[in-house]
Length: 493
Image 1 (cartoon, rainbow, N blue to C red):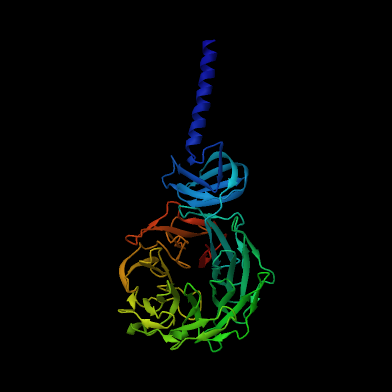
Image 2: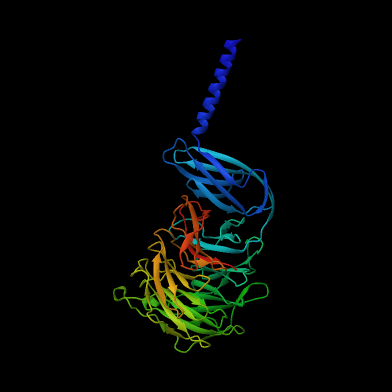
């Protein structure tokens, strides 16, 4: 009897031991949020970590499955802090982790979603890489109220046409417009304010009859502007009028001629003036128009176009690629070839431009190495944004893979503060949310699994202008094969 017991215990011990040893070969996954068996309102904040007891190379990636084989989010490394959108219902979710030795660990979390909180606003990216075979697409996110975190909409990627290079929404956040450079169309979508889902507007796409490099929406929402840009004679601005069913129709008198290569827009808050950045083969200009929101007519302002000076002799060019209007008082231009930011005072009630004192301000130095005269060219600076206080300006640098931070004086003059670290931001654009408290840009790939794309998010310190990565950043989204580049970003109210 004693022998039988000993043998049974020995077998049991061996089974237990080998089971534990097999378990310790796999990553150990710890989920701290949400609690198993909890009931809550979406979006759901998942916080988890994983360690590999036997793999010296550490963790490769972590993923959330909302249902069998249904991927909700994937992040690189051994830590995960993200939000996912789930419709009401019960979900047997799995948090899975891979180490760099091929081992897999899992944790199981059952949750009951009782409802979905109304998103604060939405963000959309247009994605395309001319060197890949992937279909261009639009990726939507909801913005979590209060903390600025992004969560993929449940719709998933929306297939775009051929070469989506720019995106903009109306002031109310009800419609989204995408410029396609190759097809020469503007694609229009309704935004479902409950969840950010997109649905095509009747009749879309709307032909502009020339390559479209940029798109903007009048503050009234009744006019849509398209930059017709083949970097040649015949370029200009097409004006579309919004119809009752949401479709667009070219306005009488459209298009309006510009210098060659219009590629960016800015407007004053009231929509009285439209500013257009012309690359013009490296001899840059800013066109200024008065806007009649009823007739949709554009009238050049006195002195327009305003030449962007080539100040840096060795760069031998001026090339404005982005514009930002600050409260109708100042206009800033990102010169992506000279590597400077140009600043202008806007004449009250007139809209004409005058150079600001000490403009331009050096950002990088002759960094337009991506070439000119095509909208996907990498530039430094590439895009501009301003915080809620109006005291800090941010310039995205494609080549340096960072953001330049300037302070803005009461007279509009900029003062360089510092660069964010290398690799902190790369592609697309810099955009703030409607609160002006959070900033978003395209990721450089840090913390992003292979085959995925991502946005990065920052909180803004309104006293110093400093940017701090949000704890939930980066915000990845799947794309198989070669990763396409974020071409542009739109954040709706």
